[in-house]
Length: 263
Ligand code: T3D
Image (cartoon, rainbow, N blue to C red):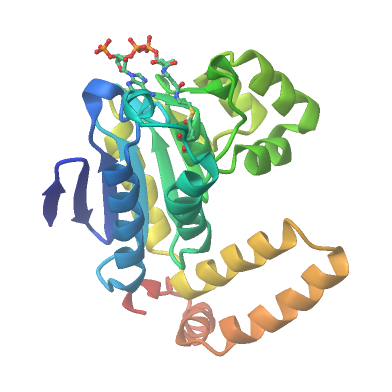
């Protein structure tokens, strides 16, 4: 099923919802309409039984060039950055991180500023060989926002994150893979098909267990080992009580592949 909003294209195929940021002439730089549309589409996906995995990608040659600087220039008076972030990027990143379905960020081209934060926010990050990531904020004398200060040091360490943020240099796909900024790099020609195939493989996995796994990882990233161990024991109860678990165990005993897709 395909539907379109001028700034966000949406297509569902084989349980995979692909949301494409659609301001290609601005490398999908984000305006408020785009940020609100994306957040709303993600929230709708959470309760849509036809969707098991969400892919966020960009139309054209860019993934997302961050905040639309044209809009910034058109702002009247002094900008309330805190309010703007609280109404736009913060709910978006929180929605991605708490969504009870896997979110893949499929980085087809340049991801800059808040676009880099968005690229890093996925449960899985798949890059095209044409993808680049730039913590570009310091070029306009801002600090990294939309989660970059949380995601990046956890992936590359604080000193490396600081260097990337201070110099705003482009990271290539090959370097991004070596640094752990993405899980896979695919050829640009086959990128959309490779992302779809990966997403469909993920969609066949046990969705309730993956949602709880995501919840456990989110918790563990900012907790002590003792707290994480205890949280696992609580979430394991929720996984073990679900019909998916019964299906997995029965399939093992019957020497067949589990059919998680029906739950
Ligand atoms: O609430 C708040 O406002 C605070 C939140 C801040 C969050 C942020 O994200 S701050 C960071 C904002 N983003 C940037 O500073 C990135 C600016 N863009 C660039 O540095 C470069 O465009 C790129 C490195 C991303 C890509 O370079 P390149 O050479 O591949 O492309 P280009 O030629 O620069 O851009 C192509 C077009 O996209 C161009 O338009 P034109 O000349 O063809 O009409 C360019 O102006 C436009 N574009 C690129 N980025 C933005 C943009 N237009 C508006 N806003 C952008 N961010």
